[in-house]
Length: 277
Image 1 (cartoon, helix red, strand yellow):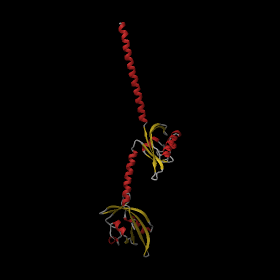
Image 2 (spheres, rainbow, N blue to C red; image 1 turned 30 degrees about the vertical axis):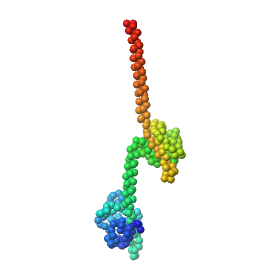
Image 3 (cartoon, helix red, strand yellow; image 1 turned 135 degrees about the vertical axis):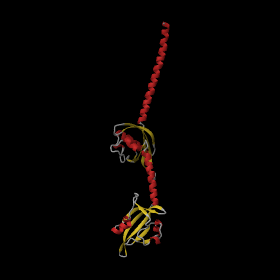
Image 4 (spheres, rainbow, N blue to C red; image 1 turned 135 degrees about the horizontal axis):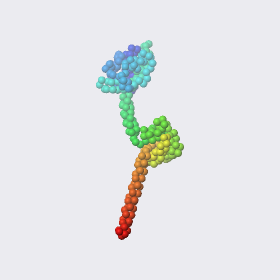
């Protein structure tokens, strides 16, 4: 078996060890046989990093309660090999008229390392997404939000502060929601992306926002479209600045025209005055 197997008698002493258990624990059968503790030099921890006391080991609990202990995860510090993670199952069995415990050990160290690496990557990606000024969200084919970042919540301004499970009809006016849904359907049915489409929406706070919307189809491994990725940039303030800049430019042009008119008028008026004088 790939899993380690250790049989403890009614006193909690090791009586049977298979080769996989020797490999996982890093100890020989001779070192293990007759022992009540695998190794007193080892330190054991729970998944949260806290101390795992011996009286709460699956073997101890199974012997005392005669109740099977399933999928207990333990971290074990080897003096030489460092930390390993094992998943333990302890099942009470009858041995020579007494209750014994059959323990199976699964080395999940590599799985834990992979999970921790994935968690770090996921946390990093979540941080990047949440600090993005652009709204980023995933929708399913029904138009329901299944992932949303902080910027999207700020734009949509849901009353309960959450976006997951909501559609545009839960957040916006019917006109705005219908516009959003038609864009979604266009992407979902055609498989073609929409890039930087300028739209005006009214959020639940009755605020008019101008946004640039990009929508990209989301494909499953089998090639079917299962939703879409949307990236929305709020350009309301930018548009306001552009409007003010245009107004300022128009005012500057008006002033220049008036100055030119005054200059021309002054020149034309000075000539007859000179003649009269």
